[in-house]
Length: 162
Image (cartoon, rainbow, N blue to C red; front, side):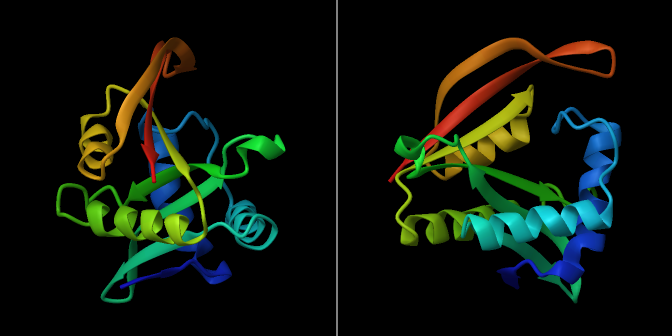
């Protein structure tokens, strides 16, 4: 079941996200996120920006989430958004990402967004494949813009235009 995230989902979401913070270059955050901080992030995107934050549940367990954020603050960017998706570390490769991310794209299109940006640290074959399955096209790559785990990390950007 895919549904909007609720405040009480923050505990499960940080359980998923903090794994990536501590063990992956998928996010450039370094310190684990608290439940309170995650609740604030969810509330801000849903309430202040009217952007979707979705969770994927299976057997009453949140196994993934996807959300959209403001791309840039300038008004002319108001129809562009950046998206993210994370699955529980044990749920990758099981086909959960496509329906979750597809629903996010459907909601963004219904809200009138025109361009969707997907940024990812490289290499990230799983994320690249998911984005390209949904029609995203690679538009650029920045070399060595992130530094985590004592190494430089490249970042690529993919775009979907409705």
